[in-house]
Image (cartoon, rainbow, N blue to C red; front, side, top):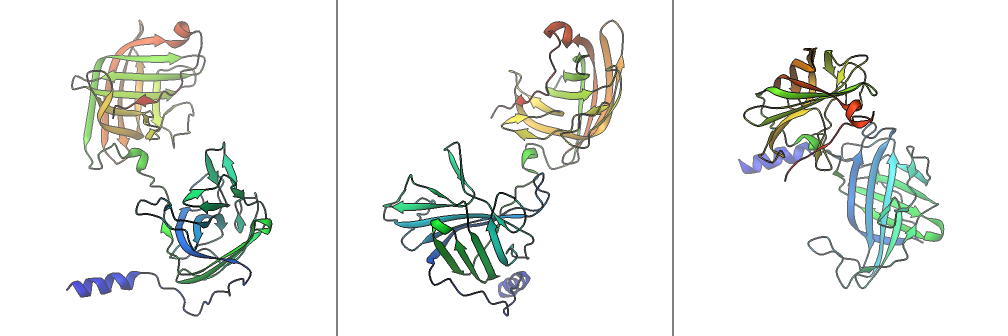
Length: 346
């Protein structure tokens, strides 16, 4: 039975075209013998303005080796090449379109990213490290010109690189490209995936509003320590009906903010979540991405509100909040009520 299972799994793996032969290796090129990293990072549309497939490879020459944790060994000597580029397409194995890629800042399909340093802290794009006795030389070569030619397929490919003064390099052989695209669910993993119903009722809640910026915040804590934080945008008055925006950037009047999940260990509104005695989020969090709420002016600086929302993983959130109204402009001199990011205790 085990042999049958293995056979079925193997048969599902995409097969390369055996007739698609790679080009020969440039005889003047330095041979790259090791693939350190080969990743597929973004598809078109994953990043705003990106209209191509983003791939990144890292190769090493003979003499460069890594230990089990991925660090250079002390006896390593040679070159490490980082190559980042954009392809018009990828196949089932994430292998890029064959052909010529030109080093350019255009960031379009068929271009190689030039090398650069991010404030001296991180090297980016296409660059060359010189390794001596297991250490990276300070003289990093950032590729600014040249071309890369890719041929074959993931099972048997040739990648010829000509970086002008940076030298020529070539890799030939099989390359396994990993799907390293970011998990779209990652910012929301503090929320239970099992659907349920969460109810937050509080009669001592607060509604803080700013006429200057036409924004409001609803905050309340239920008796079982579930905290609701709802951020909204209004047109002329905070009393009214609101629906959740289309995404976390939508701040159209009449909308409640769509939560972007956890960002830099801070929780973005709107959401409900368990808090501890010190007021820190300490348990399950439900990120609001759909639904609506009606907010009513009760007069004499009071309000009431009733809403039903949907969380990121599909739970139902019922909110009934009432309490006092606070004029933020009067207290803070007209400053904007910024969408606060609430710290989570880890």
